[in-house]
Length: 459
Ligand SMILES: [Zn+2]
Image (cartoon, rainbow, N blue to C red; front, side, top):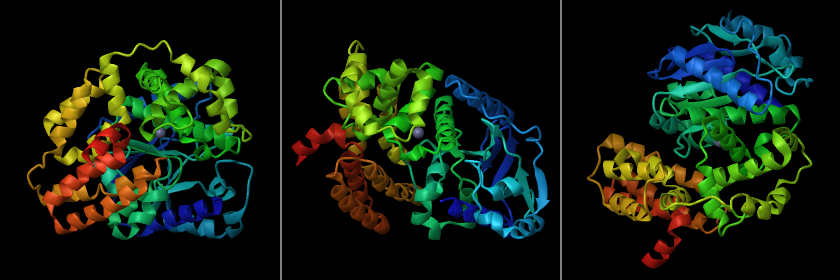
């Protein structure tokens, strides 16, 4: 794994030698580099101040030391790409050497991590922040002008912000179709120490992603792979942190609604975040924040065992949550993953459907609103212009991505069958067939937990 990372890291450095104009601007910040992709309209200084504060808040929430910026973070060394490359090549033994530092290889420690410089012949060597006594990889924080541009680039509309390398699932699928610009942007986020988000993301989602970073550093230091833990724990940790910092406890109503009949061994995909938060909250109550961190760093912990044995205490912890009609409607909206349906329909979504979703997620909606939403979006909109067509077609892979995270085995074939149809109708630009199939895929692949009865009735 480390060898692969290194090879990629050298490749990125080499790649920047041959590139010309850049579709982004790199701005140093205390913890690494902010990549402003395609010129988003933000107040740079304000953004850096807020993000810096968010890092401090997240780490201090867990009583972890915050990473310490290098004194020279604001003035990264500009070096000739050729000189840097020659230097690295003169020490090939470092390429595969193993060192003590759990975050950086001997090669990286010796020569620094290079980002594309001001012009094609230069590289920018960003100084390493120090965390818990170790030099660590700088955090690359990418900001896109819109979520459409961000999701479109990686052909994945299932997220609003992301921590971790975008390489994994993106390269396989679309490498051949990338333009030069797209390739350059994606290479900025090759390393796990990356966050991508858009200007539409709120404070809470930045805190959520930064919590992943904190958990990743903590686990990595203790030789545990964060992403080998159950998603309930990973996402629960991040949402619990972000929710606590912003005093948002909507997860309580969602988790309590699930606790009325459901259990912890078979959590529907759309409830992973909220129910995961309730699990982390309970573990913190039982063991304290430090105790929870120790569990995360302990490779002998059997998480499946822990989670299933927690069920009675978990149910008890949510028993006194009062659930209003608006809460029930919000729960059903979450269960149907209407937020994801919204993202997938965004280019053609009627304003009224948008209003309904806002109402539902604010806890002001009713169960009838959900039916009304589906009625509205089931009406085939007029044939769209080519630009919208492309935005809709780019969404097709998101059905597979969502299904791959789903524990319900039945939807695999359903998804495969609908995907073939969508590809065909999309290619033929047959809107009257494409759109209803798209809605069918939304209901059966994305929203199936809440609409099972409806589907059975319809069949
Ligand atoms: Zn997350």
